[in-house]
Image (cartoon, rainbow, N blue to C red; front, side, top):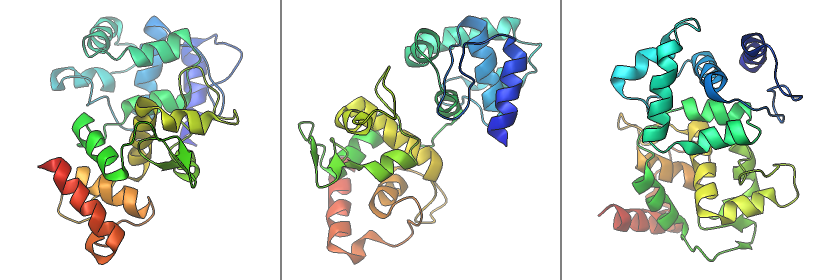
Length: 235
């Protein structure tokens, strides 16, 4: 329902768009003000904001109405550039942009930073030369099911329905990190009930899967091994 309302809202907002509607599996291009408008609309529909990319003093921008963005546009554009978030501009302006691209930009995944991603990779094996074996691909050893649950992220200009889109993304460190980010945005939770969702919880989620992650890792030999690797990385 959110997606349907969002599609209608963006259609009304922009007036004219490319051939494809912004629905699941399709894409369209947004540039300049229309990109900012679409970003704000999607973030508001998701009841989130770009807290990971915009300073607290700027957060009010993303809660403003669509008629209050003349100055907001320049500020957010400046933030995108300062924080080197060219990926969103390149994805949505120069290439077709999916609803999921905008939605994922809105989501702030608590404590999932580059340091945490490196640790998650270390726990998984982080062999940058690893291709695919026994149903797992890339440095994070990502399965096809994990990739599908993450929303099928792909390399730039790739099509998730292409036969080897999963393998090619999972074998690339930065694309596979995007898979992990998308997966945690969907399944992230406080697995060990310590009151905070952090890298330890994400490590538990990668071990157990997104459905249930509360079982302590020390109960199995594989869990113990992953605990040891995680502790090595966090030292």
